[in-house]
Image 1 (tube, rainbow, N blue to C red):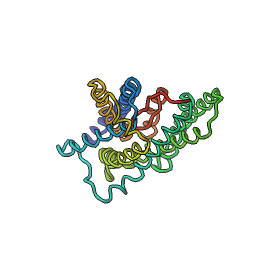
Image 2 (image 1 turned 180 degrees about the horizontal axis):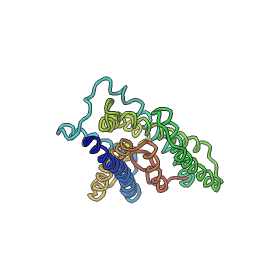
Image 3 (image 1 turned 60 degrees about the horizontal axis):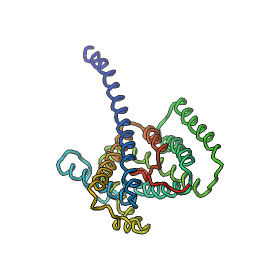
Image 4 (image 1 turned 90 degrees about the horizontal axis):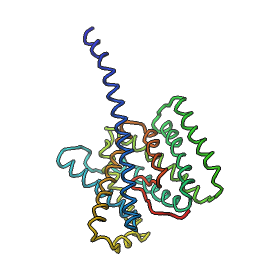
Length: 290
């Protein structure tokens, strides 16, 4: 009887600790999201750095280096590369590329208010995919709250008289890619699969290659190499800070999804959309045509 009594006494403490970890991971993600917007705004707008893709590549490279060095020093653990890794990771890299391209395309064709409103549809899509893919069940209160957000989005969208079918298609594709990315990230973080560090490391490894190819095809790489502020210490400091924050954003996103649901991570991430367009790893804060 005494041991059972002690177990019962420890349950409330364990529950409080679990809730605290969930809250702190969500706050960490929200904080990283906020600060990377500020730093990227300085890099892309104040200094007029012409290539958000190269900035994203810098952030991915930083993630790869930090995690690999940490693994070598046995600070963290994740599986060594083998032929099963791409299969286990699939389809995360493809979802990222689709998310990235559709995100940039939609923000260039829609006004920021309309983009912000339509991005809210990521939330019910995430809920739907969690139910289908992860077999997760949500209470009626949560479902009603989600649809209340959508109702508010419809009301807000009604005040925008502009219509751009191509822009709407791209932003809804962006919503689908973002929701699928969050749900599959949650699935792949299973310790029996890759774990949260393995997902973070190998996803960055596989993402950096197609992003680099895209930067060449769009001319971003050439523009970046011809940029005039590479000898400016203040710019380099801001650029490196953005790369570090990019890693922290990726890490906090995975951490938030690990301790919470993909839906929680999506809702926290939706706060950013009121500021600028989100493309998962970095936010392109350059002014865009409406």
